[in-house]
Image (cartoon, rainbow, N blue to C red; front, top):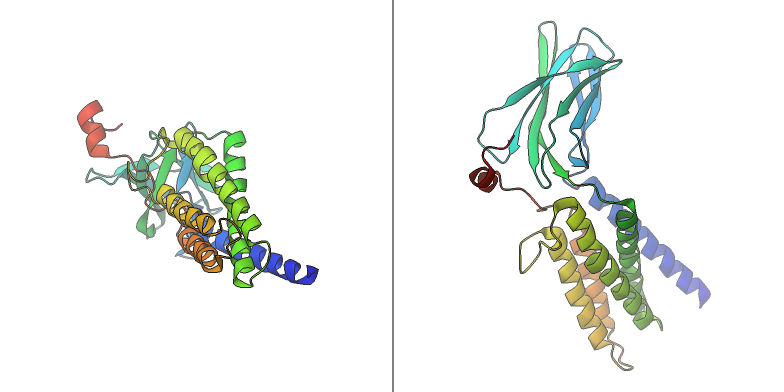
Length: 273
Protein backbone atom coordinates (compact mmCIF):
# COMPACT_ATOMS: atom_id res chain seq x y z
CA UNK A 1 0.00 0.00 0.00
CA UNK A 2 1.43 3.37 -1.07
CA UNK A 3 0.35 5.23 2.07
CA UNK A 4 2.20 2.71 4.23
CA UNK A 5 5.42 3.20 2.26
CA UNK A 6 5.17 6.98 2.47
CA UNK A 7 4.57 6.89 6.23
CA UNK A 8 7.59 4.65 6.77
CA UNK A 9 9.75 6.88 4.58
CA UNK A 10 8.69 9.95 6.55
CA UNK A 11 9.51 8.20 9.83
CA UNK A 12 12.90 7.07 8.47
CA UNK A 13 13.71 10.60 7.28
CA UNK A 14 12.72 12.09 10.63
CA UNK A 15 14.84 9.59 12.58
CA UNK A 16 17.82 10.20 10.29
CA UNK A 17 17.61 14.00 10.53
CA UNK A 18 17.26 13.95 14.31
CA UNK A 19 20.17 11.52 14.69
CA UNK A 20 22.38 13.54 12.33
CA UNK A 21 21.60 16.77 14.19
CA UNK A 22 22.26 15.19 17.58
CA UNK A 23 25.54 13.66 16.42
CA UNK A 24 26.79 16.94 14.97
CA UNK A 25 25.63 19.15 17.86
CA UNK A 26 27.23 16.96 20.52
CA UNK A 27 30.49 16.25 18.71
CA UNK A 28 33.85 17.42 20.11
CA UNK A 29 34.60 19.45 16.95
CA UNK A 30 31.33 21.42 17.01
CA UNK A 31 31.88 25.09 17.99
CA UNK A 32 31.54 25.65 21.73
CA UNK A 33 28.75 28.15 22.47
CA UNK A 34 29.59 30.63 25.22
CA UNK A 35 27.52 33.24 27.06
CA UNK A 36 29.22 35.23 29.83
CA UNK A 37 28.88 38.55 31.65
CA UNK A 38 31.76 40.99 32.09
CA UNK A 39 30.52 43.83 34.27
CA UNK A 40 27.61 45.34 32.36
CA UNK A 41 28.69 43.73 29.09
CA UNK A 42 27.05 40.49 27.90
CA UNK A 43 29.26 38.42 25.60
CA UNK A 44 28.03 35.66 23.31
CA UNK A 45 30.43 33.78 21.07
CA UNK A 46 31.32 30.43 19.52
CA UNK A 47 34.81 29.03 20.13
CA UNK A 48 36.14 26.94 17.22
CA UNK A 49 37.17 23.36 17.96
CA UNK A 50 38.22 22.21 14.48
CA UNK A 51 40.43 23.74 11.80
CA UNK A 52 41.08 22.40 8.31
CA UNK A 53 43.72 23.54 5.83
CA UNK A 54 46.66 25.91 6.07
CA UNK A 55 47.19 28.84 8.42
CA UNK A 56 46.22 29.42 12.01
CA UNK A 57 42.75 29.53 13.54
CA UNK A 58 41.22 32.88 14.39
CA UNK A 59 39.39 33.28 17.68
CA UNK A 60 36.92 36.16 17.23
CA UNK A 61 34.94 37.49 20.18
CA UNK A 62 32.20 40.06 19.46
CA UNK A 63 32.78 42.91 21.94
CA UNK A 64 31.67 46.34 20.62
CA UNK A 65 32.72 47.96 23.92
CA UNK A 66 36.20 49.33 23.12
CA UNK A 67 37.15 49.51 26.82
CA UNK A 68 37.32 45.69 26.88
CA UNK A 69 40.72 44.10 26.20
CA UNK A 70 41.64 40.45 25.97
CA UNK A 71 44.16 37.69 25.46
CA UNK A 72 44.13 34.01 24.52
CA UNK A 73 46.17 31.48 26.51
CA UNK A 74 47.03 28.21 24.77
CA UNK A 75 49.20 25.11 24.97
CA UNK A 76 49.44 21.78 23.18
CA UNK A 77 46.93 19.11 24.16
CA UNK A 78 47.61 16.88 25.94
CA UNK A 79 50.79 18.26 27.50
CA UNK A 80 52.23 19.66 30.73
CA UNK A 81 53.97 22.54 28.99
CA UNK A 82 53.45 26.13 30.24
CA UNK A 83 50.67 28.28 28.81
CA UNK A 84 51.55 30.75 26.06
CA UNK A 85 49.65 34.02 25.78
CA UNK A 86 48.54 35.89 22.65
CA UNK A 87 47.24 39.47 23.09
CA UNK A 88 43.97 40.09 21.26
CA UNK A 89 43.73 42.99 18.83
CA UNK A 90 40.62 44.91 17.89
CA UNK A 91 39.00 44.44 14.49
CA UNK A 92 35.91 46.66 14.49
CA UNK A 93 33.44 45.19 16.97
CA UNK A 94 35.59 42.10 17.55
CA UNK A 95 38.59 41.14 19.65
CA UNK A 96 40.76 38.76 17.62
CA UNK A 97 43.70 36.43 18.20
CA UNK A 98 45.11 33.66 16.02
CA UNK A 99 46.04 30.22 17.34
CA UNK A 100 49.19 28.91 15.62
CA UNK A 101 48.83 26.26 12.93
CA UNK A 102 49.49 22.66 13.98
CA UNK A 103 50.26 19.50 11.98
CA UNK A 104 47.36 17.18 11.08
CA UNK A 105 45.74 15.62 14.20
CA UNK A 106 47.56 18.12 16.42
CA UNK A 107 45.43 19.61 19.18
CA UNK A 108 45.61 22.79 21.23
CA UNK A 109 43.73 23.69 24.40
CA UNK A 110 42.93 27.34 24.93
CA UNK A 111 40.92 29.85 26.93
CA UNK A 112 39.96 33.48 26.46
CA UNK A 113 40.60 36.12 29.12
CA UNK A 114 38.82 39.48 28.92
CA UNK A 115 39.21 42.56 31.09
CA UNK A 116 37.21 45.77 31.56
CA UNK A 117 38.52 48.14 34.19
CA UNK A 118 38.79 46.17 37.43
CA UNK A 119 36.58 43.34 36.16
CA UNK A 120 37.92 40.29 34.35
CA UNK A 121 36.64 36.92 33.20
CA UNK A 122 38.17 33.75 31.75
CA UNK A 123 36.23 31.22 29.69
CA UNK A 124 35.33 28.50 29.05
CA UNK A 125 35.41 26.94 32.54
CA UNK A 126 37.28 23.97 31.05
CA UNK A 127 39.71 24.97 28.25
CA UNK A 128 38.41 24.43 24.73
CA UNK A 129 40.26 21.85 22.64
CA UNK A 130 40.73 22.41 18.92
CA UNK A 131 42.00 19.78 16.46
CA UNK A 132 43.84 20.70 13.27
CA UNK A 133 43.60 18.73 10.05
CA UNK A 134 44.60 18.94 6.44
CA UNK A 135 42.37 20.30 3.69
CA UNK A 136 39.84 17.76 2.42
CA UNK A 137 38.76 18.44 -1.19
CA UNK A 138 35.06 19.20 -1.57
CA UNK A 139 34.86 16.54 -4.29
CA UNK A 140 35.76 13.92 -1.68
CA UNK A 141 34.10 15.34 1.44
CA UNK A 142 30.64 16.09 0.02
CA UNK A 143 30.12 12.65 -1.60
CA UNK A 144 31.33 11.00 1.64
CA UNK A 145 28.85 12.95 3.76
CA UNK A 146 26.04 12.32 1.27
CA UNK A 147 26.76 8.58 1.06
CA UNK A 148 26.86 8.19 4.85
CA UNK A 149 23.67 10.20 5.29
CA UNK A 150 21.88 8.08 2.69
CA UNK A 151 23.27 4.94 4.34
CA UNK A 152 21.71 6.02 7.64
CA UNK A 153 18.44 6.76 5.84
CA UNK A 154 18.27 3.37 4.10
CA UNK A 155 19.41 1.61 7.27
CA UNK A 156 16.49 3.14 9.16
CA UNK A 157 14.12 2.44 6.27
CA UNK A 158 15.24 -1.20 6.03
CA UNK A 159 14.74 -1.63 9.77
CA UNK A 160 11.22 -0.20 9.61
CA UNK A 161 10.42 -2.34 6.58
CA UNK A 162 11.59 -5.47 8.38
CA UNK A 163 9.79 -4.50 11.57
CA UNK A 164 6.50 -4.21 9.67
CA UNK A 165 7.25 -7.35 7.62
CA UNK A 166 7.30 -5.38 4.37
CA UNK A 167 8.21 -6.82 0.96
CA UNK A 168 11.22 -4.54 0.28
CA UNK A 169 13.41 -5.45 3.25
CA UNK A 170 16.12 -7.08 1.15
CA UNK A 171 16.21 -4.29 -1.45
CA UNK A 172 16.61 -1.59 1.19
CA UNK A 173 19.22 -3.66 3.05
CA UNK A 174 21.33 -4.18 -0.08
CA UNK A 175 21.13 -0.45 -0.85
CA UNK A 176 22.22 0.39 2.70
CA UNK A 177 25.26 -1.90 2.48
CA UNK A 178 26.32 -0.50 -0.92
CA UNK A 179 26.12 3.05 0.47
CA UNK A 180 28.06 2.00 3.58
CA UNK A 181 30.83 0.45 1.49
CA UNK A 182 31.03 3.54 -0.71
CA UNK A 183 30.82 6.15 2.05
CA UNK A 184 32.65 4.34 4.84
CA UNK A 185 35.24 2.21 3.08
CA UNK A 186 36.02 4.08 -0.15
CA UNK A 187 35.37 7.77 0.46
CA UNK A 188 35.85 7.59 4.24
CA UNK A 189 39.50 6.48 4.09
CA UNK A 190 40.12 9.15 1.43
CA UNK A 191 38.77 11.82 3.78
CA UNK A 192 40.90 10.38 6.59
CA UNK A 193 44.00 10.46 4.39
CA UNK A 194 43.55 14.08 3.29
CA UNK A 195 42.73 15.20 6.84
CA UNK A 196 45.26 13.20 8.87
CA UNK A 197 47.60 11.41 6.46
CA UNK A 198 46.33 7.89 7.24
CA UNK A 199 43.87 5.72 5.34
CA UNK A 200 42.51 3.72 8.28
CA UNK A 201 42.97 4.19 12.03
CA UNK A 202 40.41 1.70 13.31
CA UNK A 203 40.87 -1.98 14.25
CA UNK A 204 43.21 -3.73 13.88
CA UNK A 205 45.55 -0.74 13.49
CA UNK A 206 44.09 1.66 16.06
CA UNK A 207 41.13 2.74 18.15
CA UNK A 208 39.71 5.62 16.12
CA UNK A 209 36.04 5.53 17.12
CA UNK A 210 34.69 6.80 13.80
CA UNK A 211 36.44 4.05 11.83
CA UNK A 212 35.48 1.38 14.35
CA UNK A 213 31.83 2.48 14.35
CA UNK A 214 31.82 2.06 10.59
CA UNK A 215 33.39 -1.38 10.88
CA UNK A 216 30.84 -2.53 13.49
CA UNK A 217 27.98 -1.34 11.28
CA UNK A 218 29.37 -3.29 8.32
CA UNK A 219 29.70 -6.50 10.37
CA UNK A 220 26.07 -6.36 11.47
CA UNK A 221 24.81 -5.50 7.98
CA UNK A 222 26.83 -8.28 6.33
CA UNK A 223 25.31 -10.68 8.85
CA UNK A 224 21.85 -9.33 7.99
CA UNK A 225 22.49 -9.81 4.24
CA UNK A 226 23.76 -13.32 4.83
CA UNK A 227 20.58 -14.04 6.80
CA UNK A 228 18.52 -12.70 3.87
CA UNK A 229 20.12 -15.05 1.32
CA UNK A 230 17.72 -16.82 -0.97
CA UNK A 231 14.13 -16.08 -0.06
CA UNK A 232 14.63 -16.07 3.71
CA UNK A 233 12.73 -13.46 5.71
CA UNK A 234 15.39 -12.62 8.35
CA UNK A 235 13.38 -9.78 9.83
CA UNK A 236 15.19 -9.61 13.15
CA UNK A 237 18.79 -9.55 11.89
CA UNK A 238 17.82 -6.56 9.75
CA UNK A 239 16.04 -4.85 12.63
CA UNK A 240 19.05 -5.47 14.87
CA UNK A 241 21.51 -4.17 12.26
CA UNK A 242 19.39 -1.05 11.86
CA UNK A 243 19.20 -0.48 15.63
CA UNK A 244 22.93 -1.08 16.13
CA UNK A 245 23.67 1.39 13.33
CA UNK A 246 21.40 4.00 14.89
CA UNK A 247 22.94 3.58 18.35
CA UNK A 248 26.57 3.70 17.25
CA UNK A 249 26.03 6.66 14.94
CA UNK A 250 24.40 8.59 17.78
CA UNK A 251 27.85 8.58 19.36
CA UNK A 252 29.27 12.07 18.68
CA UNK A 253 31.24 12.31 15.46
CA UNK A 254 35.04 12.50 15.87
CA UNK A 255 34.95 11.26 19.46
CA UNK A 256 38.19 9.37 20.15
CA UNK A 257 39.39 10.64 16.81
CA UNK A 258 42.93 10.93 15.46
CA UNK A 259 45.22 12.70 17.92
CA UNK A 260 48.89 13.57 17.59
CA UNK A 261 51.15 12.25 20.34
CA UNK A 262 53.28 15.28 21.25
CA UNK A 263 55.73 13.20 23.31
CA UNK A 264 56.53 10.97 20.32
CA UNK A 265 56.75 14.02 18.05
CA UNK A 266 59.16 15.68 20.47
CA UNK A 267 61.48 12.66 20.58
CA UNK A 268 61.71 12.52 16.77
CA UNK A 269 61.64 16.18 15.73
CA UNK A 270 62.29 18.18 18.89
CA UNK A 271 59.81 20.25 20.93
CA UNK A 272 56.61 21.20 19.04
CA UNK A 273 56.70 24.72 17.63
